Amino acid sequence: MHIYCPKCHMGYEVDETLIPEEGRRLRCSNCAEVFKFDRSGMSESLSKPVREDVSEKESEPLLADKLQEENIKEQEEQPSLEVPEVDIKDIFERLSEQSEKLFQAEQQLPWHKRFLLQLKTMLGLNRRFNMRIIGLAVAFVLLVLAYNYRYEIVRAVPFMNGIYKTFGIRAKIPGEGLEFQNINWNYRDVEGNRVLEIKGFINNPTSKKIDIPVVHVELLDEDTILLQSINQKPTIQSLKPDGRVSIGIVIKTPSPTAKYVYLTFIDAY
View (tube, rainbow, N blue to C red):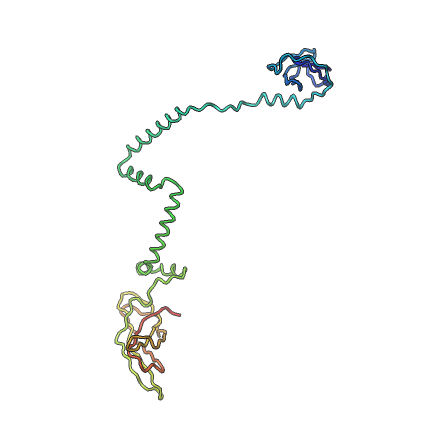
């Protein structure tokens, strides 16, 4: 079957089985004219002319396939993607109206809620990023305070000492609450050797049970310069409220220039 474009008269040879009884929409590959062709040989133009005053050309045998026709249908059936015009004035009017409504709603809040809202806005707490920064800052401050006041915290809440120990932080003063009483020291000879003997008591004047840490002894000269030091574990592990235990410490070969004896508690080793 020969088909001719009604506009430029370009001729095509098409298999007649591709043309149904009701006709088919075709596009001319020469002038892009869209037209409808039926089996009676009638051609009806369906688009505006692309070119005017095109002279009739000699027919050329070309293949008009179904794919070209389907592409034409798809292009015509696609919805328009035109961007609607935006009225800037209308946008500003709507924003102004919304701001006015927010302001009126804020004025109807109780005074304390208005104050909190203004404070939140001033501090930037209505932004998630600012909230994270402030949260990190508060957490850092709390950690610093927890470290600086660790002894006071453990005194008030004793089980917190275990948490501090987990992180390797000393939060308890060794022997806090215990007292040394009636401490005496003197030199004596033991099997021909001069030794320094220290005697006294450890007293617990508090109303709670306290563990006894290691006793640390230092010998100082007249200028309070350290000469010798030893550590001695207690004979018992803890003292009951208002309890007391005696201590006896012997220092072999003490320094002959020792003038002072200093006793304190240290953590167990």
